Picture 1 (cartoon, rainbow over the protein chains, first blue to last red):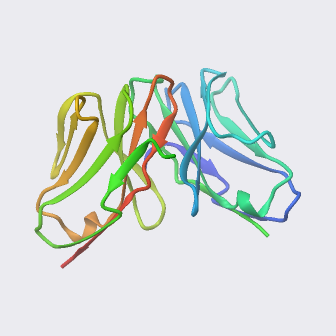
Picture 2: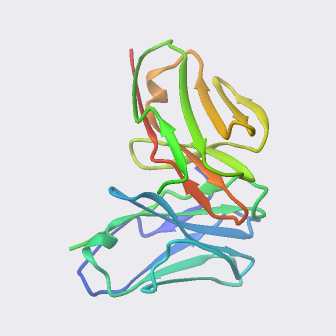
Length: 113
Length: 108
């Protein structure tokens, strides 16, 4: 158990819908990272927050947004969902960016029908 | 174009064998991560290194900065080592660029 929690574990929805994925980092970790893992693209970095502020942005679509709240939990919002958004979404956390190991959550499996 | 290349893509071994997985990256990095993804999907961070060598139990990770190359070694492999091993390079920003992974199967 990494100490990072993600909810829900599974999510099935329809095209055009909007969903919110939630992540709670390990106690004391200030940095949260979001990753997408799909069959054709592998693991891809989406976005990183550090102590409430966006710190780095990767291949995140405009239909996707994220935020980190004052209690350090983070949410990833996916809207206007398409079939190709079906993937595993991982959250990871670390104490500080750049220098620390990242601890991964169990992931949320999103299926868009 | 993926800036991180892993080899081999698939690897089959008998229990007890010494295993090596390779990772090459294209330009200078600030750190190299090795991750393990279990069949159930969970990801565990194994190593983060920027120089030299690190060891944890039967796992050893090395990095050669000049050659832009890292290796993950597993000594005395065991069926429970069966997983996908992924290397990821961290460049100047904090974002990780991932390799495509090496699927390892260890048979008894």
